[in-house]
Amino acid sequence: MNDWGIIGIGRIGLSMARNMSDKGISLSIYDKAFENKLDPIFEEKNLYPELKKVYVFNDILNFIESIERPRKILILVPSGNPNEQVISKLITLLNENDIIIDAGNTNPLISYSNKLKIAKNNILYLGIGVSGGTQGVLEGPSIMIGGDNIAFKKVKDDLSLITSKTIDNSNSYDFFGDSNQGHFVKMIHNGIEYVEMQLIASIYKLLIESNNYSNQNIAQIFKDWNNNLNSYLIDISTKKILEKIDGEYLLEKIDDIADDNGTGRWMLNYGIELGCSLSMLSSALNTRFISKLKSERNELNKNIKRSSLEYKVDINSLKNAYNFCRLINYIQAFCLINAANKNYNWHISISKALNVWSNGSIIKSSLINDLYSNYSVENILYDKKIINDLNESKSDLINVISLSLKNDISIPCFNDALNYFDSISNNSLSTNMIQAQRNFFGSHSIKFK
Ligand code: 6PG
Image (tube, rainbow, N blue to C red; front, side, top):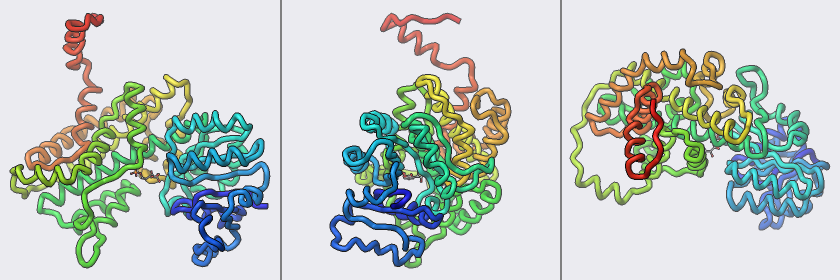
């Protein structure tokens, strides 16, 4: 009998199986793709010695029978239909107190309905967000958990074996609340990730289009910055800036069409439902949407006259502007967590989230450690230190934005950060006029000062 079962041996499932098996956790694994093979020889077993002891199944019933009860079954299949089909199937096959652990990027709304579905059969449910990508999951992922507390207690010792050490020297997993709250925290992580990625992409664009910086120069700037920033995303971007295929830079060969898996859209939907500004995420996501209009962009581009490009960029201002934007990104994400806590009566701790993200996650960087150690993150808008930091670098952000405007370079997310800061720190917005207009045509009541 094996300790755990894993369903779904894609890239992430394979890394998870390797990590768990390497730590001495005995595993049964099953993937729908194995069903078509007469002899389910798992080729990877030959590549990775740590998989030698793993039991491979091409039949889900035999797979389930091979796991010690109460069973712990980790699902790592893509979110949406494939994930829901696996869960529905498991409900018909598992016994009381077995634990279904949904480790996909599942929409928190779905995690909640899954829990209700599963609970009818007295099966336990954990919805867990797993960050780290293929390498991170292999070396020690960041894991955000929601669901049954009893189930959590049964899996936590094994999670301690496979995760990384965080800033407070605990393991990079934590329990955040009900079935949907682990996936909610992972969704927030992804929203932050989208903006962090877009900021780096915007900086690269501003520098490369200036005709004053080569890929080598830009990579060097990023490397210098990363001595302090320790950002995983800056690090991988540096590698990608330098990568070549057939003598040409990879970035010059990649088409500029960016996809998404939905997590950013769900976060924006939460923002709309809870009335929170996520303007930076919206801008990052809109950029991906616009990127998909390739033929329209090709057509319109023919009729647009751009400024001739050759300009200098003050690298120090750029770094300060970047830091400013990163802070606003976290502020917007924290405000959404606070609003969710208030409206849904949740108790998600922002400090705990930062701790779990501080190692193993895609967004790990010194900024997370800094926020965790030096700011009142649960009440970020009242933190004087952060407002002072932002105020100090605001003029650098304005310089960078005006440079981009003058030279027709779109640097998504930068303007949104400035606009948010200018609004959030202003006690006299243009919205008195909005109220007056609403009052005129809709007889909406107005509140006097
Ligand atoms: C992680 C990532 C990962 C996510 C990819 C793709 O933390 O390991 O967030 O879970 O699936 O980043 O996301 P998009 O396809 O939406 O860019």
